[in-house]
Length: 307
View (cartoon, one colour):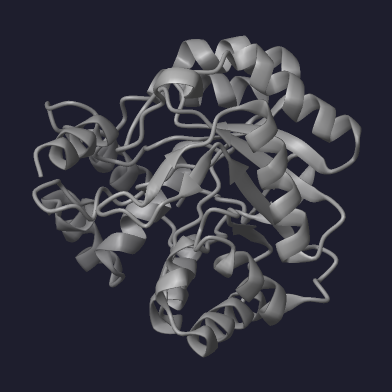
């Protein structure tokens, strides 16, 4: 069996490697959202991912209601670069200007009741899914990073992360001191493997979204893969847990933030941290052929455009 530690780090903060992504809490009732958040912390989650444009603001307010005064070890990570529109199927639009990044951080601080956000990700528009920067929303990376660094120097944020970026953008951002990267990545979508390698070498937290494939119709799901299901049967665990466990075993700097509105599903996701994959199981999963089509995020973007 592989020895897989349960602890990782982000922006200098130690965290459990399986955290919680709060985006879906806007779709839950207020009471259910509070219950899920409190149960997550009870089960050892100390890394919660959010954004002021989730809701907008409502997810942050629910986090504050459920968890404030916050546990000393709780690391809340947010992101900036988008604004809520409510449109279907992607309810976001670009908010890439430096002043908009600053305003989003101020919203986070107010809504969460914090003096400092431990890590804030700059959600660029270089990659999908579904949101593009146009006109004056096409902003130079250096201008954005200058604003993020100023916010860090002022003590309003701790670490700076980037999200939805290609390798060359990450390489350009490295001198700013990057704490984490959030990109689409899973067993079935390894288009960003070279970026993961760079993050591992640089000690940057790798926080994949779509870790189990896409929920959009017609796109492959990790839990449906034949090899994943075979190994899940051998271990008497859920296929989704195998998919998440592979991510944890694949790179030591990987942190997971699966989201859910259900306590039962939350407990299943957190159980992935206890799934020990044998060397043989990892080899079989490593050998899974990823779909030959475009990377998942790009494929989803095309799906949205065709609607």
